[in-house]
Length: 399
Image (cartoon, rainbow, N blue to C red; front, side):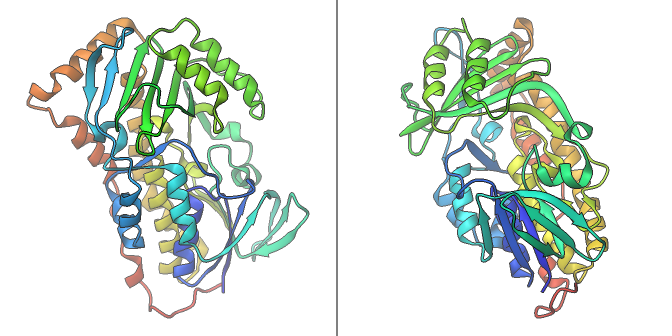
């Protein structure tokens, strides 16, 4: 059987392992963390990704864990509501906490997991890939796939330095789990000042909340391993901001799952090199501002595995087809992020007023469904093939 090493056990990795095993491959997943990572922010599905969940037989399981988030309120410094957006704007058609989704996906994968380890080096000799792990383990695989996120190790080893492919959008984001001191009931609140967005939304049936901090900035120089320094960086940026920002900052400092990173996109001429391919954020991160990261990961895993199946294991043909099918979808998702940034993180007081007025008037205008329609249009910007009909059901993949 064809062996495939997948780096990353978040969303794209387990989803790819699921489909590869279903098609007769032997996947192995390596993950730097000591176990599947719990917690995390809410992620959502739109359009084609829901179809993939249904084909995986997991739609009902994800729906059972859905956040059931309502509309999001935009408030002024005193907490008074000044505008709102419908659920689909930020929560898609179906929303779930990332940790809950990963648990569902991991439970459905029948493969070997190598936790607390990572890839140290790759050597593709044309007939296979020799892998040395940080633990010292040495293995050989037919194919390697990087599903290891924005700062992908596989991409760096096989494609070159991150700086060649990472495009900063000029913003940073922090997400943390905090107490639901605002009494949010399946909803969220957001406060804006020019170039800054702070907010919170309820999670786990309102028993907790997720604190959000977004801000515009030139490129920052910071240690990605020093979480305490990152927390202070965020706190300094939001010092003096009103509303509930001080309380949320205090919760952020104590959070067990603090996250901070640039808001960036990955742009590649090809999603593969030889016997190495990329999926999800590793290959085509659209950024959190797109609302399409999870959809791209789920759909990308489905298409990559499906094209390998359809090509009878011929990775050259499969990778080319994967690239061709995904490129338009990726472009649409990345474009949505660029358009959404100016609305979610208004740069000036003037545009902040325009944004709020637009949102207040939207229900009464002929284009009142524009937000929902735009979201669904991007989510369906790919035509899915039914790959299980593309080869005889019991044929083994070719090495």
